[in-house]
Image 1 (cartoon, rainbow, N blue to C red):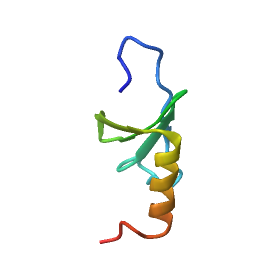
Image 2: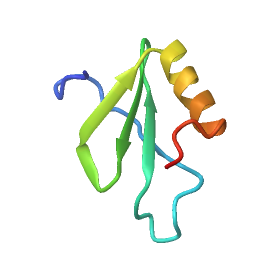
Image 3: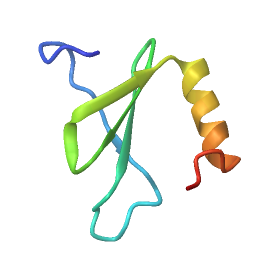
Length: 67
């Protein structure tokens, strides 16, 4: 997980975010990982290497996580 004393992380909000910017998923790219967080709880950050992040996105697109 990134250290607070390191370089600033540039977060990008999802293009599917609401007009008010609530309930957004934000993504940041590091040299060796992709980070994701929820905008309403920015202190909680999950990270994965590129291969695992790509597998997560593929699962989301395929509907693997629908309730």
